[in-house]
Image (tube, rainbow, N blue to C red; front, side, top):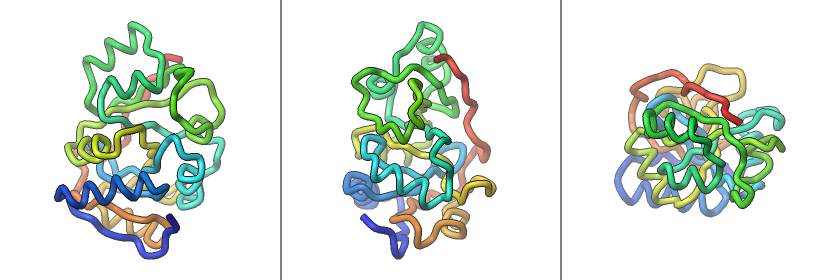
Length: 188
């Protein structure tokens, strides 16, 4: 997909299916998490992931977070230590990102990890994010949905102020309840 006009979607089931379809087609979709809005693309599709870097003006040496629907999906992309399993059980779904060794068979583009042997993975708690990730059925690479260096967006209108015309769609679910980025714990 190629961005031109950014489509604004709601939270109805048809909108979630539309957003998942855009991701499957290689597009970019901004979506809410409990922390901030993320700019998502299919984490397995290098061309789609490259569109995130292009839209944000983000350097490619800066890794992205792989958002997944649940712990089982996280274990498909990362190797969990006992400490990681305990943290995930205690804090997922929620605003915790774990940096873990990349699973050998993970369907993750090297652009997501910036070529590192580790991957940042998170299971968000926001119900709209969970529905989108479940509908998509895979890992979604998603940094904050703003131009690089700017304040992370907590509302869909903030996303549009910075990225309108550079991304395919934004799912508008109102303000993010937490409003700051997730905590990152490195265990790789």
